[in-house]
Image 1 (cartoon, rainbow, N blue to C red):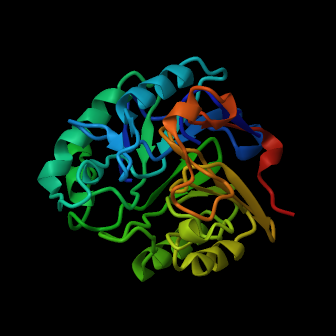
Image 2 (cartoon, helix red, strand yellow; image 1 turned 180 degrees about the vertical axis):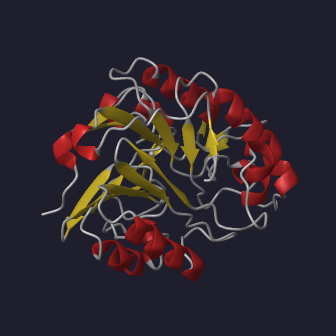
Image 3 (tube, rainbow, N blue to C red; image 1 turned 30 degrees about the vertical axis):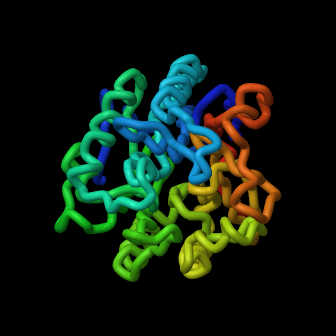
Length: 304
């Protein structure tokens, strides 16, 4: 089951960064007994705070992530691993009128690396639209054929299969999974067709019914979903990007979106100005940054 953790936090190579690799053992999915956390849209920025374009408010995303990690460290059962769902660093938001180079991203990824050190588990990361693949790889050491190659990968844990897709389109707020990744995805799913599988991607493939957010969704989301539908053991797609928690179920697949570790967006407003301001976050516990702690029991796996 998915348990909301409403005290600061987000909603899960070859890039594994952390204290140690998960101990997989010889358990099958039917014997699985573990949990993981998914947190997203950390928007870490060295040298400044997240500010509204209007200048009405500012928010310390670094301090917020520290609070999230403190909350994660109190979880029972302790998570086997953490997944960061994209928009890891966002120095581009310090000055909306200034182009940001990979070199300018570097200090923010280094700061993120430092902030994650207290986590007691390994960390898997995705790319979001505010990220920079070249700078990310320089800091976290992810191998790739080229610096700008998509950061997609998969891994197993106690009989479960996990897939991370890269939906980053540099310079664009919306997402796209290119043909090369789709081909790799089909091959990976075929190789692991008998394992219960969970897919992570930053952008949401299905619209939420909020026009301005849905304009920035996964633009070939239905194509991705059609690939996933061919494999009955794929039941969950977990996303970030939208800074709010949403659940949509269609044809046996559940799409979950996780709140950001910083400010949240309205679940109903049709205008970008209607966000949940930081002043409200401290007053209304239901609107605080959220994390999701996923516990996987044996009966989780099969789609009806």
